[in-house]
Length: 144
Image (tube, rainbow, N blue to C red):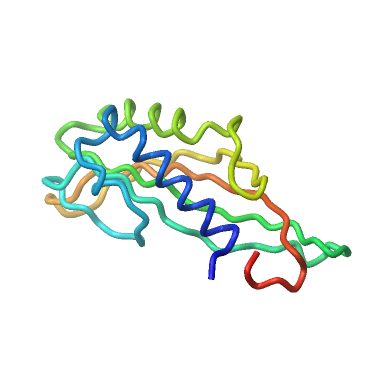
């Protein structure tokens, strides 16, 4: 069963893969995934991590506004430092340009960019780019 959120996430991955020659040498390194640690030898890598759909339960109409947060996690080698993620952050922003149309008239909003360093020496550096899709769905529709 397709949902609006799923359609939007597939569009995000497709857009990132389209920009992949400038970002990552293998499109298989760009995927939807869960929160995970990526070894530094597996970098660079880009994971799109789903959030939870957040309907506005106070809305009193046939359509309910929904927010769907997600993260684009960029993994780079720790010996390259966080500056190695800068070209990838720029490419992600260009690929996900909120001025372009998304499925179901969803609107993309940019959020925070947070840099993290894992504790283990074999881990990569991670930069989380937060985004939120906003769209409307029928109040009782399960398929969006």
